[in-house]
Image (cartoon, rainbow, N blue to C red; front, side, top):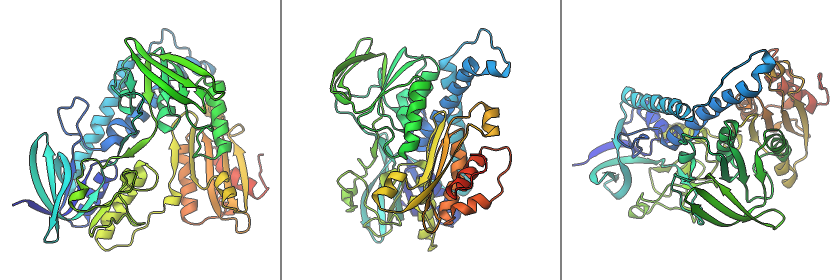
Length: 478
């Protein structure tokens, strides 16, 4: 007889493991099923893509590469001379791996603390009877079965494949391969200028690679506010030396004995052939729903493979929920986590709240890019009358002290009510500053509310304060 649970979560990424912990906290007998393995492939590793081969390891590499770049280019300004400096890519990767191992072990501890049953293997629906869903767990061919009254699908996403070439993580890399290079490639190609492409391109550019980014879209960072995106493009290309080509049409990709050849038409329609030592393919992600055997229970998916859910993450089946990258909305770890908490609380009869319109977006380049709410382009398209206030980091004392005085903060507010509609920023540590923007959106604040709040001096947050003042045409430092 299979073991019976109140809640079974399929997937232990940032949505799944959080959902499992919250469900257990609410008194439910909870299991979390996950097939993740560590880098060596010889032991289970919780945390999903984000922790193992995504958000966390990429930030570790970004920090290491920023330190190296600063030692080369910025320390002298502070009166610091570094002689005989060397870069060890393998040691940088080892540090990243140690951080990942520590955090995956932390999730294991949290499961034990909260009495979540951690079941290793690939979970799939098997059937439904007597009010319970049967789930089969395949651990390298060894199959077991559990039953659950409630099921939360949190299987995340996988890299979108590129039909022109197969990922081998030798010379043609996905995000995982890009995180594990132990030598700096002389020439690195990146297909896609989204978050992964820009962050990985930035890492290897700082430590010595010649990086070319190929983007199919005719505009840079189409999802971002275009005024901020244009400023970012200028900094990345003219000041940092990233070669970013827009409007590219890929024609052919060939694996060579010593690298990769990419043939494409550039924005002008000219045929180009480029050879790279390594090529990163970062053209987005798709929902990881293959192998769930949704047909066994009639769980509905859309034409793109996403599980169909309503605004509260309910599927078409009673007591079956889905969260994170596997459903509509932005593919972001923090969005998945909040949905996981909300679903666990809904199962318990509570009334939680998740506003997808106030989810923050962050790109951890240097300078960082972050935003929440509507872009100026969206407001124009929707015919919403708005006003805007802007301020830069160039005259901010804290930014100057840090040696990071590039960037801008822009606040968009309703022209009549002054309610904040969107906040967009590029600059130092804006990944932290954007939380004030999210709070403002959630509490329906006006730009005057931010302008009236005392911001500590000297801090980077004063630029947000100044932008709020500027929205009312009363900037004090602009």
